[in-house]
Image (cartoon, rainbow, N blue to C red; front, side):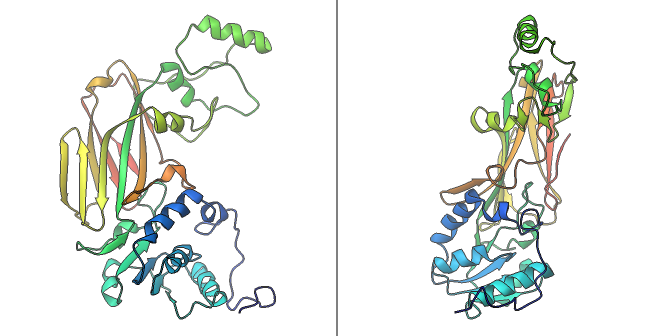
Length: 336
């Protein structure tokens, strides 16, 4: 058995900032929501199979696959430092006869070069598509790609105007005042604040009519308070799901439900949102991306990725339709 304490690295592994390093960091590795999701996905799908792992990193997914009975794994890692780290981990665990690590970027046509039955990957970003998984999907149906489904769900909820105003104003941690997040008699609010510290409520910016893109700021209610509302009080008004196994994309929006074969040449996936019911209201749209396979489901904002950049506020919108575009290479969202 390899002696971890006595032996120096077999390769020149770059010292890594395990708290912040892009791609290899403890917050990601300790993300139990992510880890339990992949454990469940791999459990019933890799036994006695030859597997491909896209984006090896520390090898967590490969180790899970071996735990669940995978025969062998061919893994791709394009980053040189992560490749060296991965090679070191494989050597230390004496898994050279189980895992073959390739220093290269995986392309969809690489599948035909290997005698593999299953592909798995976690090359997703907070916006879903920012790490290149779109280009890794098989170009024909029937290949077992894990997880199998990737989606964007647009959640909608009407909010009080006072709450909308608070979402666009950044506050210092030292500044605290009464702001209940509901529309209520302003004299009551001023009374409470005056009793608390002898001061009135501070002047704040007011949300303007139209579309306002929210930033990731510290509000009077903390960071991203809208996520608590979106998780429990919102409803889905538009959604698409990409099925990497069927090779299809299903879109549900104001035009109805449409299912089509994936066109991998497109740069954006578009959806239409009908805003006729939003007139004279403050409505928040919160995008949530995630992955599914069978009964296993993971909203990425519940893990280390955090929320998608960013939700929007709609105030007194007069247009009848908003078009939302989700870029398949960067994960960027645009509202028109």
